[in-house]
Amino acid sequence: MLVSFVKRPPIGSRRLTQMRATRKMAVFVLDKQKRPLMPCTEKRARLLLERGRAVVVRPAPFTIRLKDRLGGAVQPLRLKLDPGSRVTGPALVRESETCDPDTGAVERLEHGLWFGELAHRGHQIRDALTLRRQYRRARRARKTRYRAPRFLNRTRREGRLPPSLQHRLDTTVNWVRRLCRIAPISALSQELVRFDTQAMQNPEIRGVEYQQGELAGYEVREYLLEKWNRTCAYCGATHVPLEIEHIIPKSRGGSDRISNLTLACRACNQRKGNRSIEDFLQRQPALLHRIRTQAKAPLRDAAAVNATRWALFAALKATGLAVETGSGGRTKFNRTRLDIPKTHALDAACVGAVDQLRDWNRPVLAIRATGRGAYSRTHTSGNGFPRGYLTREKRVHGFQTGDWVRAEVPKGKKAGVHVGRVAVRRTGSFNIQTQGGTVQGISYRHCRLLQRADGYGYSFQPKPQTEEARRAA
Ligand SMILES: [Zn+2]
Image 1 (spheres, helix red, strand yellow):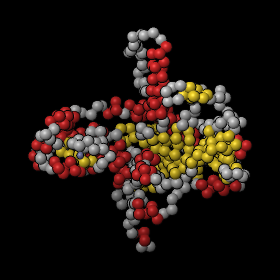
Image 2: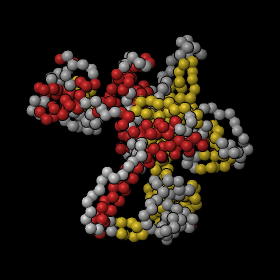
Image 3: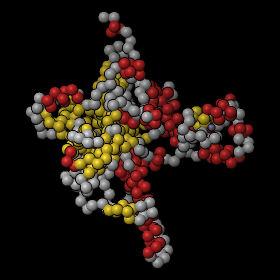
Image 4: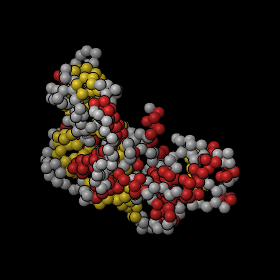
């Protein structure tokens, strides 16, 4: 067999995955007593359902329960998280280890099973609170006599997070718990910090990648991006490729130390060339001064920058599962080495020590935190005047906003099948948010409940979607 001797390209190779058909999403399986079993394929789930051996527990994430099985062999699964400010990518992988018979080196192999992208609504929460504060302030100014402002009259609990950040933490932990209920998860991985300061300062501490400086380079880059706010230090350009720039050029004896590095766009980098910074910025003394001070100032403590990440780490440890942590630099290093596109879910899969990642080209479940409605029963106009009222009852004909429904409209302009998130109206004429857009004016009579509102909206991405692809679409 000659074929087996041919060295195959790494599995992550883009060429190979383009040829291979996209894999399907894994289906979660519970036993008779609702204990998690190994996730199965869509095909197998369909057969089990057709034969009446299983029932659907919930459509998102798709979970079935076997009616005749009690317990079963499970392999340990790992849930990996890449917490982001807007989107957190959970990825569920099965781990295995292969041992090279020649060298005896152990490789950590990961098989992607299920990918999700959890979109937070922290900014919505922040905006709503700001608006409420403004209304209240304006109202007090109108309705009460003058009182001197009081301030610093509250005590805050140690480790308190602002509501928008607390929400990020709560929703992430909530999804970890949910997934633990439907899959045999035995370990967690989390990207804890953006860059590993230890790795930059003591290059000899860990592993071969650090010694060769490859991974250390990634950490330095992430650190600089954070320190210089992802902008060109000289012209302030953002959203352009940035290059690492030596403030004192190497040809003039400048070092590779962090305090001598900054970021510059291509044009600025070339214009500066090997001139000294005093020469380059002789007409902009203010900018020269600012760059010099910023270069010397160490970045605020990484722990403070990443307060939410540390809070999440504490919450994950409280689950009792083993928690592995990684840095953002390592994630990027793994992703680049394995030639995997940048998405939130795939970033999560690349967190921590990964040698090989397989089956990553799968559909993604997009989960959007939507909240469960508002306490306020009054809609207000842009200026805070009342404009319409909501009902006291949340339910209309047994449905409530956020329920996932399937509507089969037999005839008329809206004839057809619409599946999606419903927004109820007291008249019984609902709006349905489908994958293709919003369909208005669907009678409750045509609707059938698929899943109760649980504070999240769901949609499916057939392929991992990168930021660029999303912007282009
Ligand atoms: Zn520039």
